[in-house]
Image 1 (cartoon, rainbow, N blue to C red):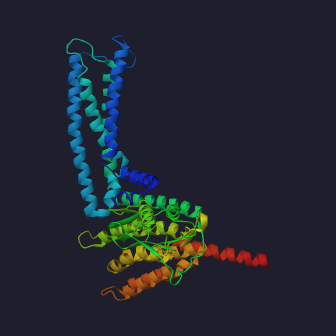
Image 2: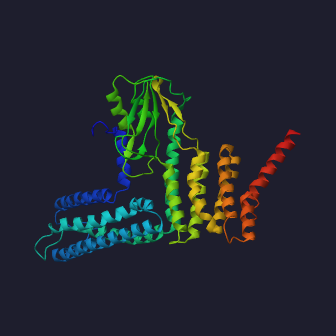
Image 3: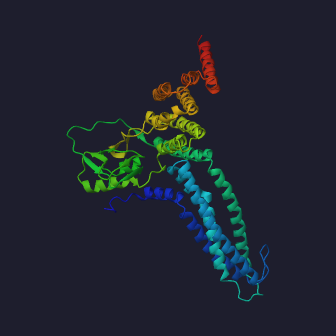
Length: 461
């Protein structure tokens, strides 16, 4: 059965590339392998060059070279332990201060992976070169190999300093939420490109009495990939496929994964093909899941508003970042609920998230926690008002009801907060209704809209 649900090669390659980016082992291992190859290549170059003088190379006796290489090897492996400790501490701080789901952005940090790999690679290189140093203390050391060792040491030291500087900055909340938002924008852009390549179609109803094939989920986990072209290619021409889940959803083994009608003659083969085209992972990823970016940002905001952290300024920054991400999400064309493929094949995706659901996922939980912090409530109201103006200006008024509902619910909760003075409540209500005196951008946009409308009226007259 394990072979039956093996995903196609492109899907496995995409999943492997994503795991590679989030691995603290894969890239360092490749760098260590490269250092072994470099050591052999440098040794071959020394043998080819002979004992003659070479420009731009380090010249020293074998005894000095042995001491230098031994010192560098010992220092790098010790420093590697320190860097490992710093990485573990940063992961622990990120998990406790922000959210356990944020650790993935620290694990996938490319500079940390390169520094860890280069430290171990320098150690391995020096150990391999030591065996080529002549036992005669007064004899010359291999120049090319020794020069490469010195260059590796200098580069490693500089990268350690850069890593410490990068680590100090990466623990700042602004850097954390920016990385999450940036990855979310990349996922959204990739989804938009996929949507552009699809051919929308009308979504038909399941005919009454039509025999169907229900493909169950082969395992528990999170849906990380379900490419439409693969799903359509897995069935016979003239077949309708309904995806009974969505990217980012959690499924249990045995739950309906895909429904197909009319039922194919070879049910077993079709079941194997469809099970392989929906990739289920043990952990939730952002490979194709824009909603996971919102989940991480909301987690940081909720942790900041908890009694243990009590950092409303972080929650304010999270609200602003959520607004920045939703500005793009709400204006990006959503994938069609039904797409057609060659041979009359049809794919239905009824469980995709709508704009209203993205708005709810971005604001519901923060809205529940914000009334105790008027500063955070004011930030949420301003972000919601900004989004209302943004979607109206962009000609997407279908998102306005969901945004205004969040404003109304938040204002309703604020009216019930005990101890909130009338002046603060009046200010928050003014923000929610669009009469915020501090919202210069909204007043500018309103004035610009009025000016444009006046220009159109004058032109028509």
